Image (cartoon, one colour):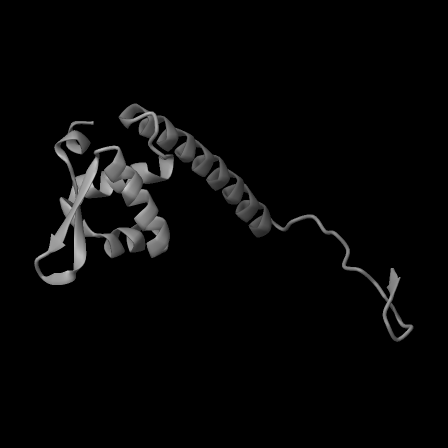
Length: 123
């Protein structure tokens, strides 16, 4: 128990055992946490197989580009769930490794299309 600012005493909520539904939710949450940890580790291993300096987060970009040939950076950012600045940094790193290239979008002169290079496809 503790005193409130006006002198009255309030009881803290008591800890109770989770109900059946709560227990199932917590169990699912634990399983998802393990799955995500394993997926991140696997993604890191696959990224290192492509190139030792490749960030694991950038590996998903290569996979997406392999599936869709050419995409705008904004489409990639929306798919991965990152901002434009993060996407720009990741694409620059992939360009520096020779895995992707950018070309002007013929439909919109202000936009760029990103695609895998021959080296990116090979790896």
